[in-house]
Image (cartoon, rainbow, N blue to C red; front, side):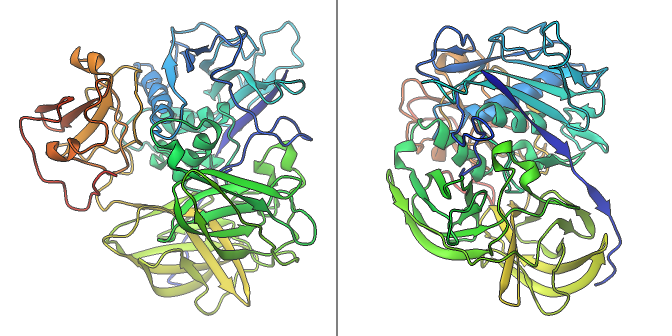
Length: 563
């Protein structure tokens, strides 16, 4: 058995005046074995007590964070586990077990989560100190034990998550707090690592390797995160309707570490994959339909970076950069089947790279965002070799219009900014930032997250919800601002809900329903499913297995209906 670690780093943030001018990457067995790692939810042995009837059990240390200390810290971690549990296409489910007093990361069959408050050195729990780990500089680290040889190679046998309370200040607040890092966002990222997911180059993904202080955008999973966990733990109520794309990336020889991603017909980034030493990539858990495939190399690791081989595991240390961007290969994803699509990018080291992103003049190496219906917003990129003339920068998709382009230099790098208008009905989710000039293209994957016009950047912590029980559901939704009369859909075990212990929301992003709409959900008649509509002012409405409710209301403007 061998341990691997993966963490999340704080973002570099530059506030500069610029003038007017696998469906995922899997964590691998070892540096030489590119096979993915995963929990065996069905066939584990008694050595893995974290798994009970196919459900992963985790334990929180009651001390939590010294910066919060009122229980909101542990509630934030629990919400992150519930978010991963709420993916309808995945068999993965979590349940909170009794609290722990354990503050070590030894392979002991206990999935423990705790804060190191006085030191960045994490105790391995053995008499020897040479196997302890220093997590200085990382916001948090996941420690994952996996089998590296024999018939169970790749099986995860234990995991732990440690938050760095010595270097960083934490918050669970619904409101942004300058200089503090959001517990729920970081927990969501680290849980992904404990499931076998590596870092994602998609800036809008939870598994992206950096997070900004005060940010709440990472409290939700992207389509890339969802596709990854669906591929590893398929199941739920619609996994059989998902499709897979696989193929080989080659420029005369197999390419290691090529980033491959799929865009939907609206220009949104669905998911990514990373090619192995044989050039093979695989994206599973994808919704059926037409997509375009794209590939490019990771960033050069020197200087600033969005995503380089340094953000990947040891297996990808030699990720190749001797090929050019290739895109727009049309592929139709089959429902419940696999399509093969090989990619043959031209040889040659890229002359352009995107390493920094901006919104309204604030530069960093993390995602940015736009809202439906916005206009006059400046979005920019900076990096070596970028052009300083023409109109080279665009955002994938046809529902975002570039009004003007300006140029400057940021941190010594050429910078391009565009002023954009977003259509009121623009497709939601991650979009690419694309630079094209001189017959060459470079892309920042999923760098712009398109949000609802009124979606808050920081969803509230909870309101009137508790428990760890989440039945098969959809994806996390955001609550509208207080004082409205919109409804939020909750779903869970009927007996639990009737007792007054209500579930966390697990519905599609922005999916707000009237009672009649709720009655149209596919399994509303299920004897084990139950929907609870909560009014954000005071009134509670119940929708039972018969699909009835005492009142209804119009859907808020700008919010999509449920699938």
